[in-house]
Length: 157
Image (cartoon, rainbow, N blue to C red; front, side, top):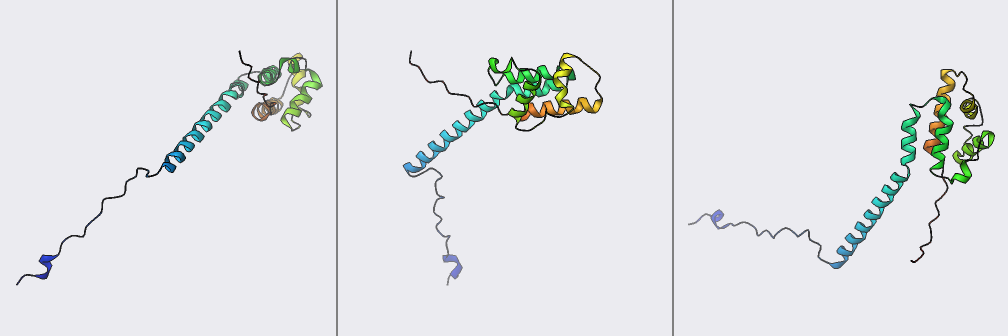
């Protein structure tokens, strides 16, 4: 007599399912996702490269004297606005431009409103005043809103 357990055998295990997409729809979905990721990477790179002037100005702001902050802000502004708009601005018009493009009144009150005065005739500043002017300048560099760039129409050659 044979033992009943001797006649048992393993269950049939089917092969694991393939990870390869089976239909054309998956290939289309992957292509669309790849295009979207490529567009996103290009958009982020363009934005990163357009903000290079901000990064350089923020790095420079720590090493520049308080008397040179107005010139630094003007150089940063020239990277986003046309020279005709920025070059003629001085005094209260320059401070109003800085406040308008920031959409916050950073330069209308003391001590930040002295930024032009310091550029023309250096005077003594306390450490707190210099820090406040440097802070307002850094905030403007970081958060100002440049005008939207107009796309140039393609002219066939």
